[in-house]
Length: 547
Image (cartoon, rainbow, N blue to C red):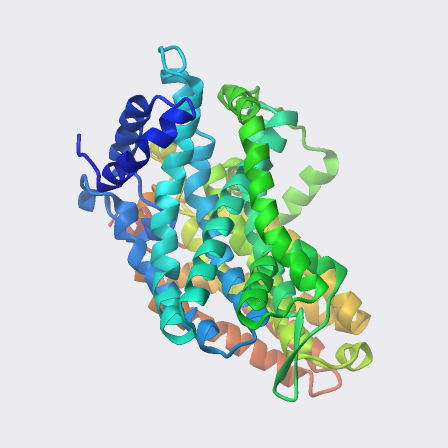
């Protein structure tokens, strides 16, 4: 096996590990095996660019770091903004936290929740503390690579522009943030592991990963709104809830050290930035044996639940789907979307972002009072939720269980129309509609019942847009391909072109609001072109799929 440079660097701290009772040679061997195996794993952010034939023994994660270097360049302006360090560094640390946390969720949860160590090493004469330390060092090695790639260039710029004190403080803050994020993620999973087991636990972990992704976006908006620009100056007003936005702890630390601003809340935030990571690490060390013990619950594959469909559900299904074949594919696609964990982890965050984006546009672009907002036409920002549809339609062809796609060839499927129409209907009613209904309730509260016809028209346009996307995008059997084959970059130009249809729908909708009964005429028009598109879209033969 290859002797990695990171392991040679780790050899410098061999005596430190031995003092804590760690079998260093065994830990080093475990890490060497893990790093070798990592050469076969492609990180989430880079997976769309990797083909199986291009994979080799080199670590794909290292190859992907140039993307984070590019992201880091966009963080440089926050370093150069001026000397209001509480503001600019809170934003800097907030963006840094976003990238680190999402990477932890997407790429490192599988390491923290890995039970192969228990199955392979626990029966062997290997100290459990050594195994746990190897797992944590494994995560920290890659996290250090990610941190250097993301924050290295901005910190060098900060060293040149603000001096060595700024640089050292920023490095300390970033180390504390990294430790806090790793431990916070582990403690969240420990809490879940403590109360759940088996298949339900795996589902909850999946939902937590999705919720954390959405929570980071909402938290970033709260962070930005903690500051107000008044006469080209930045005004900060302390609020109780800001104490939970931990990037501000480290922004306050920079403010105290660089500007000597030692107000009470600055000192409080600085103290939290130092103390909380230390406390979290101490808690994790104490609870780590419990964490490892509860990990064994992941090996339990509970019994599949048998669900009965009520009369109302069967009636609605008959209304939605016209034939038995279409209903069968509707149920199958709906089941895959609900139970396929890899699919949910790819798609659900995108659905959440599509629900939040219109609200963010309203928050950022409409600073008048509620009465003026309720009479405006800002509800048309709901069309931004449509831009995620083509991405999800492309993902409908992928699955973590793609090897079971042989069933399509074994089944006597001659007419492909029910397969595709049932799958598209399942996407609309099982994935898109619940999110859209939640969004609609919020918009009705903000803009009043007057926009109810508009919301119905938007949903019809969303259905039409889904059909248009299906007609233009490459056709493939649903859930029949591996996620490793997903190449988002190859669809960028098509996605941009498809967004023009959203602009057309929104433009026609805006024109319809200029007339007294315009929205009702637009409703009739939307029904007509949706019906026409639906009849034309699904006349597909096996030759088009296999050829």
